[in-house]
Image (cartoon, rainbow, N blue to C red; front, side, top):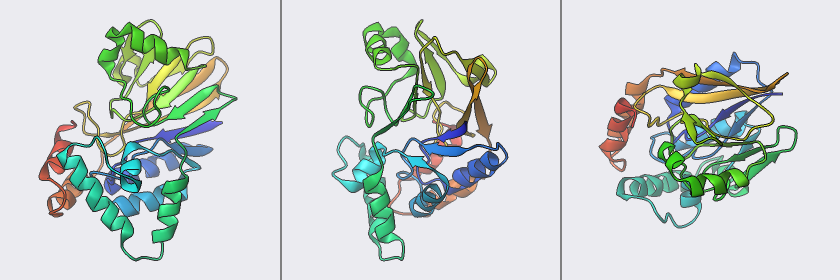
Length: 254
């Protein structure tokens, strides 16, 4: 089994199409999306349609939750974006009902027994909303609680910061491991797969992972891809309902 795992697309069509084109070359068996397909970016419907077509599993993220229900806990820019996104989803179209049904049916988490792997948007404790930041390695109580909820691996997104948390209180960003490592079956890991559409590690390129069985565990590879970023930025700047900051931040990777 070989999987591509993507997360936090955030309506960035240019980034998503670049990533999906690259995944086509990886010969994967399935694509799993960890949520936040929508929100922030200018192409929520197009991104949603591609995920519906390409992904075998898509989890609900906090931005989908905000579009479906009350958008609690969002800052001003995010609130404006999710309300605008909700308007786009509500406009009459052939796929309107299909999109809403898809969003309503997306699960909060998925567990794969063979890999002993949990897939969530946020964290093993709070699949939808909890952030796990790199500096949380200095919060031993939080990390112990999270690892106690993990059988082997937890794949997650939400912070948009890729990297691997280990039980010995390390956070390894992709460059620390040469973008390629093996997750051993006798150890536990929290794996943040990074963001397709809004990286926040001060690198502007899209990020996703591939993971597959190997003789010594799960072979994990981080992929970073440049995409037509200015096109995505320009679309946001040309949409009055979206704050310019949401485009400008793409150019800074934050």
